[in-house]
Image 1 (cartoon, rainbow, N blue to C red):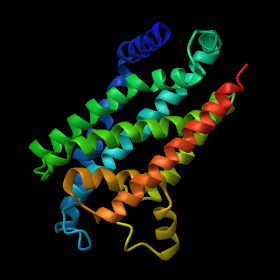
Image 2: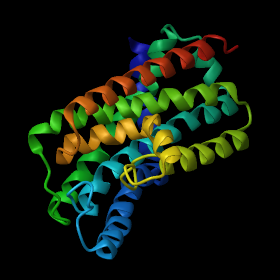
Image 3: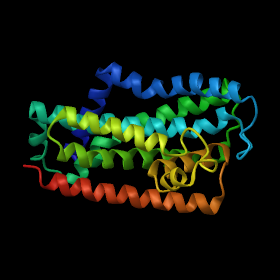
Image 4: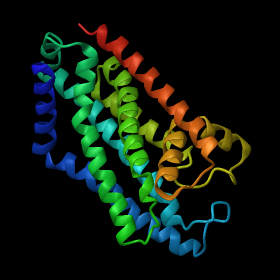
Length: 251
């Protein structure tokens, strides 16, 4: 396990010595929560008709999902930095399995996601008056951990397959646009046209965000949330299996 511990230490050093990345991961979702949700909430000036909550409460789960999505993308991008300086291929020779390598790489970043979620939820509760269901906090932590890991494994598939950094960055930009806006992250999907609603319903971001809303403000039907949670777990497992496949074929 010494190699795994070394990987954990290395990921921690990368994040703690690169303040820009750490600040971005921890604070940029707070900016969305404070600026975007407050502005929309004032513009709407009434609870969302279909949901019975104000926009600040509704958007909290979206901000948490956005943070997990962004942290996972930044973590997967690290494969390019490792490949450029040659440490990636050196680490593949270490006495640890490649599953351990993937797990160790994401572990510290999952801790960053948990800290970010704590800051966001506390800010929403203290400053915005969002009614948090604290008894569901363990479910929230589990959702943040599994969500961040699942999205990291998904991004790792492309980071391991693509050799050019600019192509990967272009792809992540497309993912941001498609996954985030064709989901329930920013708005309820019920009023959307049938086609967009169908796309949102099969979007893993929707599954993740809906579980986050259920675990923070108790929004959602438990049976539907259970189905979405199960679907996201299958998505995460499939992403892990694909990432492992491509990692095994790295030479």
